[in-house]
Image (tube, rainbow, N blue to C red; front, side, top):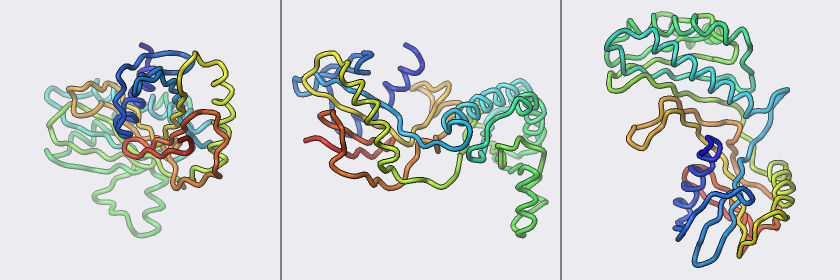
Length: 273
């Protein structure tokens, strides 16, 4: 199964669990994405991700590049690790909307070296935050930075700081956050989705009912397995995160039921029975 389909299936399973729906049967498809037997009926389910865009590059495109950078950074840090040097969590705070440049990728060994040098001084447990030079100056100017405990270093423009935490209980992991002003999920986000998916509905295989599931606030995992406590690389997506739901009803959806799923715990019926 392709990774994109695995991700879709994971979101669908979480949606069904949160909605309290237990299909008698679930199979992968292409048009629709899935076909489920629910209460004896064949339900075609189309799943899509809600997103907002920012700047020259698409927000999800930027986040994907940042995630790929984080995966590569983890591999460099692992390569530098000493025997028994485990239990390190690397928390990256990203600047919203700033892409990864070729120069940033070329500087990966340097950034990994900064992390390895700083983590070598950490007690177990222990933590330290390395600030970018830009944000160190901002914090100095506002008087909220402690130079003794918060060192600064030349970091890529899209990284605000890197927080290192050691607890010695697992392998090296990377996590982090992205920030910005969270927009509402309104007509500007919904209507382009409906226009695209209403057209796709015309090509559906024959089903008794049709569902559209719009997923927001997604999280990407790399190297995740059911036995593990969490994935080795995990980031929440700001590009797919929305605040209040403020859409004009009734919505112009051709689907029997249209849902908004705010991963991982909130399901809202936008239209339908």
